[in-house]
Length: 84
Length: 281
Image (tube, rainbow over the protein chains, first blue to last red):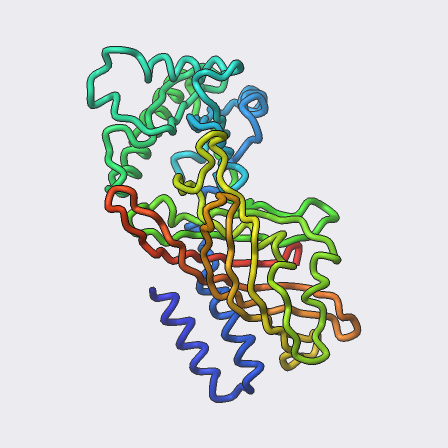
């Protein structure tokens, strides 16, 4: 919410000095910055993902690290591909 | 996520009657579906976490939801953290050394070297299902030809939204079970995009020319029952001073997704948002 208020305030503060078409660019870019997920919301992408269990096992052995395996009981559930 | 930093993370999906199931998954499911487990322990979801040591031996597993109800996200998170901490302590004790940590780098789905395309973030803002509010990230590889409909507008013109279907087809929420083929269990794909965008030039700056494309678009899926949803699409495009080809894209989709509530036999209209950004620039 704070991000939203700041972004809208920024947009409004610029409105007086911009032409209509410039304002349109700023309007869309404001929405883009407002809705783009934050690093915290994307933190799942900070994890060290491996493409398969076999690959994870090889890396774990080589690097001396444990494995976190997410098991999905479903016909389609490739969480690495985004939609599941 | 800090608790998962020492781990190499991976996923596997499949059914109990599949022919090829990894041994560790068989081991987890043998315990999970064991007859005679207490009722509390058998309250289960279709997602499990299995934590293995560096030799690949199962150290600990737990149901992602288990006895914690879906409607209490904070409890769900704290239970997951607690379970991972428990396993980490066991692994550390067994191996006698602390596992190394992965880097903090954010690695989002992206263009392969030498390729280009569009990254799409999608979020269903469902207050009743917090998991849906987490963004899904997809990357769609695109060629110069895919951007042709949005080439530099010498004057305002209308763009048929269906020509952008290749990437707009990613705008649908994940995990919405009523939009899944009951036989194949595969989610219905977005198969129709209708609507039009108004594409007009904006004021250039010292390095680039700008245009804005805006309009209402409707997306329909392969369910065959006429299901569709719509929203506003807004894009800012940049072009070189001497070429009509699109250089970069930033944009958003703000729509409303009609979600069927089978229990109440009603439809809830839930905000569906998508963010677009061209890559590699």
